[in-house]
Length: 434
Image (cartoon, rainbow, N blue to C red):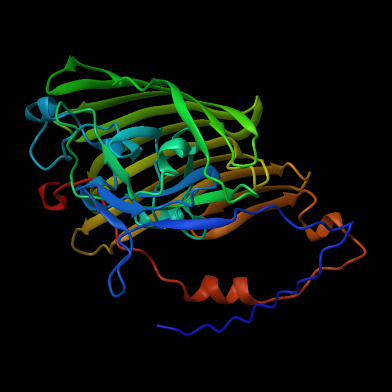
């Protein structure tokens, strides 16, 4: 245990013609349990419901969703369809399939969806792989936005309405393992008048997603299992503000998910290759207010090993986070390109005369640029907890501003010596059987 005291100083300046006020929502409504003494996140299943009453002059509403798989859902991308569980040894992994969809519903109607990014946390498979550079999203998981504006004519009638956050699989009953942690908020802008907003939804096309499962033998006690899912959302609405402005709202989403898992030699080796592609766009009178283009490739190779030193496993990871994102009309657009190649070995049960060992190597590349032309890039290589390469650039680095100077701080060196290892976690594998 250690105690670290950090002082953060922020300076605020009055806005002027050169530094105008930042755009912002007028109101923010929480989507949570609203508990005063317990966690505010929904543990899904079951779905999480929040009752909201929006002001009658609301004209824009954007939902932001926080979504994280936990417990039996932490490695959801390594789960297999229930129908294929008999083909692999017990306790190899969990069921309910590898596909997950996070949804926002208004009074039971689907308003939008997200295909979540597969976050690898700091104890995933080989903890030493993620020291000192963690996988993207491990400390700051991505959020997902849905435009609720098409439902404004319904939500501004002065009555309570139920906004639901849930997550589902592509099993016939959409069931999940426990659990997903979901929460969120609704950002709302108001019309300058106090008159109610009116209008109606003119088009609502949210079909059930199309899913396909296949299994192919590839040898003795060896199989390929494929899950392929496509989804689309198309909602149009016309709203008329209290001040008389007429808005045509178009909200469209398209997603594709593909997951291929290979289990060989009675699941002593397993491989997953997954890709998520998606595009979301909302326009108000043809002007984009929400854009989200995602590409999330993932590849993991996992294999049990044994030699004179003991038994354990080796793992290799390739993961990318590619996203062009305009979350709302009040926020700046960003483009992020992140890639990580990593591998490591964990000898869990050493033989006599040998110690438990683990190692890890990662190659990390990150690029960021936003709508205000801020930029940042970094390339970091790590071998066995030692940074072997570290290069950075962009307008958000001190090197870009040579006359400002670089602040000195020993914080990074201090933390590197104090932060301990995470406990190892695997997708429902019985470590004692190998």
